[in-house]
Image (tube, rainbow, N blue to C red; front, side):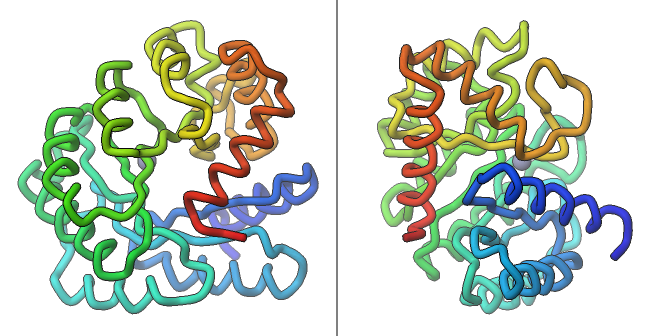
Length: 250
Ligand SMILES: [Zn+2]
């Protein structure tokens, strides 16, 4: 195991230690897929039944995608323990890849979700209008979807709620400058919220700027419980049920 995959195993084992029973691992590139999937199966055979995978190519990695890769992804999506297509979407924070390329492969991978019937995990950064337009178009035959690391306004949340989407909420909720997300979280009903780490990024306060880990989800749950006026335990239980419903895990 090389450094980065080692860190993955570390956070996975930590989640187990803390009693977190659901963990979705995203694959950033095609290259890493088999390596991580093998790891999931090995761990599952030992003691980690709560780890599942999603397949998809992140918008930042779409530059050299080819049509053959879609067939490959479709095959992988049929494997046991693969519960979603993602992260797919648009990321305009960086100038590359070109917007047209990102859109093309976003739409193409949405059709993979249609074909496989799996829910989609959407990554959308600085691309609110284009993401919404594409997902509205796709709406007619969509499966379930989650906007992961939701970073847009309450108004944008209303658009996605109207299409019955879920919202991934993480460490930003605890940030002093996270007011926009707090407003959105006040507005989004509790049965549409999934808690997420976005590990290794976006560690919540008081660990902001440090390497994130699954155990810190507790701080996000605490903040959300204050916003919703319910207990942290209720937040955690509800978020777990939402995740099971969304990923169709019994
Ligand atoms: Zn993402």
